[in-house]
Image 1 (tube, rainbow, N blue to C red):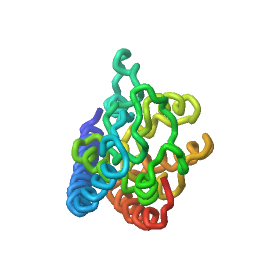
Image 2 (image 1 turned 30 degrees about the horizontal axis):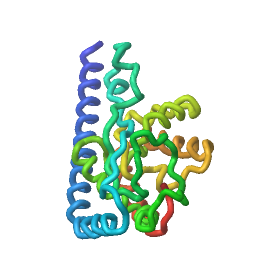
Image 3 (image 1 turned 120 degrees about the vertical axis):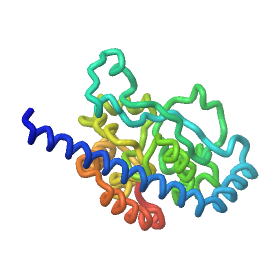
Image 4 (image 1 turned 30 degrees about the vertical axis):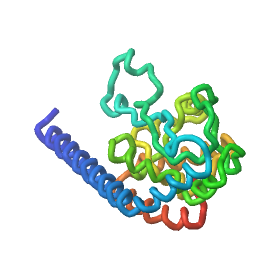
Length: 228
């Protein structure tokens, strides 16, 4: 490598680090402000959930997160045989009737799922059940903007069925994303393929400006009860 090539490589690395630092700062800012502004509503939601159905207020589930091995170029065979990304626990307000989730199958939730409580339907309609995921953002598991994280079993199936699916894991998963502001609930594997194409567009052009643009588009989508 020549001196000029080394200089360019170092400069490129610095730009990437600055971009990542700016994106992380944005995520921390949005998460903190979001939690502060939403705190009264979150207390009200917690009370309604507790008063109207048995079970915990929060629902937790394992999801597949960012795949740092790809970013670091790891060739360690043992480390590459995993779930496609770092598993983490996602937080949501419980919207379904409580049951034994330990043995429940990992399935897609549908828009008119009969397991959803009356309060849960309202929360899902306006995406209020996602508010606790600001905690995931503070923990570093998620970003505010990014591909939606999937359950491990479903992730493994989709990785086999949808080309490029695992490429989504090159960035942290998000609460909202480019796919979510462009398409509604998945009802078929073709819907998943279309969402993945949007996710891959986001991965390719991810930037601070892009995150701000998607955040701005999320607000009218949520108010109009579209997306996701």
